[in-house]
Image (cartoon, rainbow, N blue to C red; front, top):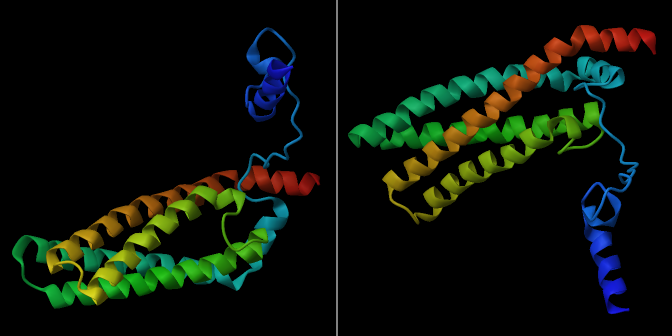
Length: 194
């Protein structure tokens, strides 16, 4: 009796695709999980994306933030190498952080208009997850700056870590933009058939 209860408990949490916990050749479990279509935007999502004013806002803010990042990176690296220019580096990192918060808030609004949820839409789930790391590191920089809990050198190292994470996140979004462009003819054909 105990082994039957134990087997049922294991079966209820087992993720093996075969029934019986893979203890023999048995038929696969059939799941009814709703799968995301193989394309980034459905035709309706693409129409909402193209009609949203937040699409233009994101298109303008992204390159501005990147330019701010490049300038700020120069100030941060200059300070780390020479020990000079702390004030310029600090102001530039704060400005970059403000740009990041702005693009994240407007991006969440855009995501809601296109996908119906503010964050973690399936099409941009991992980009959003990584964005929280980026925001966390930028916020950590502001926290240590305001609290004085770290030396200026350590503060700039935190800013540098935030910038590395930002670069990775930016590449994620660039790859998604490329995927959206590559799928356009196929997605347009699907929309015409439906």
